[in-house]
Amino acid sequence: MKYHIIAFTIVLVVIGCSIFQPKENASTINAIEQSGSMQKSASAASTADSTSIGSSLSLKEMQQLINLHNKVRANVGVGPLNWSKELAIYAQQWADHLASAGCEMKHRPHSGRWTQEHGENLFMGTSGYYGVADAVTMWESEKKYYKGGALNSSNWYDSGHYTQIVWKDTQRVGCAKVECKGRIIVVCDYDPPGNVLGQKPY
Image 1 (cartoon, rainbow, N blue to C red):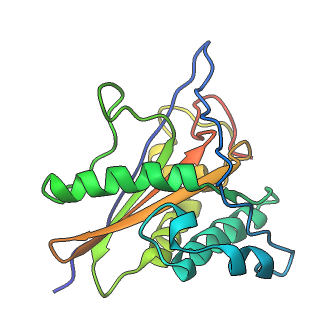
Image 2 (cartoon, helix red, strand yellow):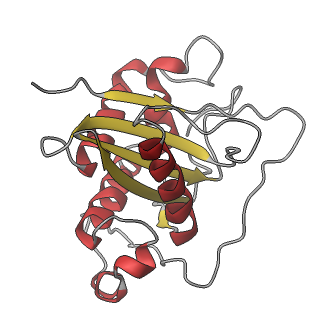
Image 3 (tube, helix red, strand yellow):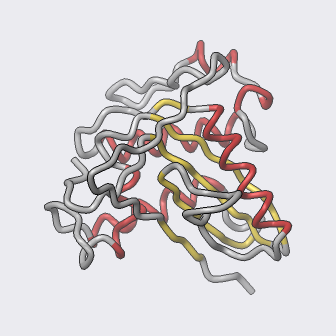
């Protein structure tokens, strides 16, 4: 019996203040650039390995995630994201925490040790049936709920995963996965974060 997919998104409201943007370190992976035909960068692919990715993702999974994100963005004329090792490490830390805390789905809190500093999309599905690519497919499916215009308190909820993916000001993404209790959890973090109320995604 398959588990029902559970997915959430974080909404960051910025009012009269700046968003913390952590500095990228030298080991951040350069963009796996996409051309209009969605070709993968052979040079980036050949130099990336499990250590440089920053999380437990395989190279293939990392490529799937960055390519799918950038395909969704290209569909609305938004530039590609770069893969960030720093964000992948950050995502893996939270994924591991969720697994150790009972495999429950929840976002980082807004205060305390696990304070959220980035945009975040989460996905959960049956391990062995769902993979990391299904996370982006699920998030993209919310496109039908976004009717255009600036986000507000009444229109962001149903399409929040999608709008985070296509947020024009977001430049970097890092993702991670963990398996627990027969499920796979996928965590993706975005910087600068999207879903700022009062602004349009693109």
